[in-house]
Amino acid sequence: MRPSGLARTFDAASLSGHFLVSRTPPVEPAGWNRSTLAGWTLLHDHALPVQPIRDGRDGSEVGWLVGHALDLDRGLICAGGITMPPGRSPEEWLHDFGGRFAAIFIQPKAVIYPDAAATLPVLFDPSLRCAASSPFLLISPGEEFPESRLVDSLAIRTTGTWFTVAATPHDRADLLLANHVLDLSAWEQRRVWPRERPRTEDPGALAETVATVLERTLAASAATGRPNVGFTAGGDSRSLLAVARPFADRFRFFTVAHPDHLGQTDLRTAPSLAETLGLDYRLIPLHPASATDVDRFMYLTGCLIGELRGRKATRAYDELGGGEIYVSGVGAEMARGIGWRRGDRPGLHLEPGDLLSRFLLPQDPELVRRAGGWLSRLPPGIDALDALTLFHVEMRVGGWGGPLTFAYPNAYTFTLYPYAHRRIVEAVLQLPWEHRRSGDLRRDIIASRWPGLLQVPVNRRPARVVVSHSARRAGRLTRRILGRLTRSPRGS
Image (cartoon, rainbow, N blue to C red):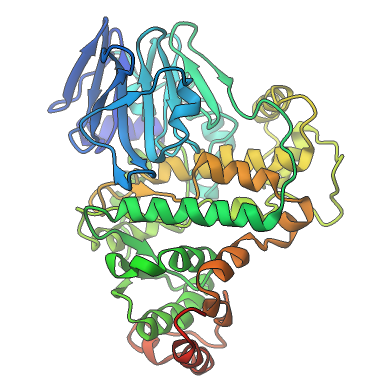
């Protein structure tokens, strides 16, 4: 179904966890909460928390924090309001926080800052003078959904791709990118970070920085509950397990039993590893998704992503039951030279079309134009290899991963990407390019926190199909390795 058809089929009040902000909201979904400040109105679904931002000088309210921010120093999820310390810029202060949020400042200037990877989407329509988390909230009363020409060009429902370089299925609306700020007076976004070419630093020290941020993020997420952690045969979920070692009993791990090759690989390793390590773990069967399930997935995610695999798992994720945080390893891949080619070296020259092709995105003239604008606004002197890493963070982790956080509202309170933190992105950009090409950061993290996990093969494809009822008996080789792992000293 096209976006215009979805807009007619579903009610905006069903957009769980969404919001909009405007001086004159174009819509007001039934049952949503309302806040006002200095002539601006914020409307939000009850599932999305909102708390005031106060000025540290006099305690006055200057805006709203929408979503879930994690205070890593105090080890908790912010609640009841936050105070901006005097003398710090908003972007510097906000990127101390982990989590999924958008900071809306009304005073002294009306602006919106996303989290470090823009994992809570913000779209804006300059003609409506409104910002919202879904394109379906940016429609004037009585207006048909204004479809972009890119709806047909990208055909995301068929191809599984996603809208990128700030484009959206809404003809007038753009997506606020990570590392940018939205000016609510000019209704334009501009880059705020990085402002200069990153300096190369020692990989060992950088790995320790990343591991520490991950540890503190996971500790804060588990301070008041027992988050659900996606667990696969891959190295990214393995790195989260390694840093969570001191408090792994606070988490519930799970694997969705996808029948494809990747899913078979997960079933070969994940259940055995979880059983051997004594993790609280469950294997969730994949129930067939109906056409209505897919339509709802597309509506909830704003038709910003196709995600052929993820939309099949709607009913499986619903079995998580809600009420807890969902922790995902999305973002870890930023340290593996995504978009790089074999012969690439520092000093590479990037054209807009080449940038798109490296991420398997179509050469649509509008996307090429937008990619050229994105390249032209990078800080002077930044290397193309760093630009590719930034593009991945802003367009894939944010542009794809952000909308995906809305996909399963019955499964969790919110989705947390621990790797989506400014200090982690900064550390990745400071890695020597050879270290990024090798993808060794996650190995360094595991080695620093739980080196025994390095003995377990990563993404070892099974020789045969492993069905869910026999998954715990599969993988004799993996079990032998795990046996050695559990017999090794605790500190190994």
